[in-house]
Length: 160
Image (cartoon, rainbow, N blue to C red; front, side, top):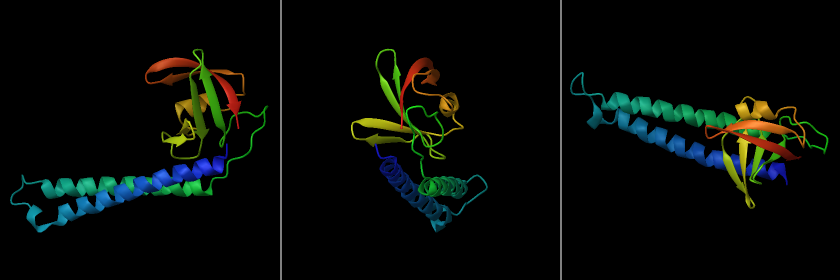
């Protein structure tokens, strides 16, 4: 699996989100400064609320912009059969029932689920609980993870 192509797909998804948040911030800002929203009295807070919304949307767009920059400059290392999990690892996990999960350890952007061929790859960061549990592990190791408020045990089946 080519991790650079996977990164490009994730960046594209983040770019779409950034555009969406930027457009939402512009729309909320326009509502905040529109003449029809000038407060009539001290209880009329529509303009103030719109300005808070605009700031929140702009902040989120800025966070996404920083994530895109970090992912663009990130070059994941190659991993061998005896490698331990570290930043840049694409990890395959399997539970006792044969259910598989695929995780990609990246510097930013944790939580994004990227469809890839017939798989769903979840981006995680080393700071996340899942990332911390996986760091330094090898194929064949068992790891217990908390997923959807349940503890589940997985075997690390592959690192690339």
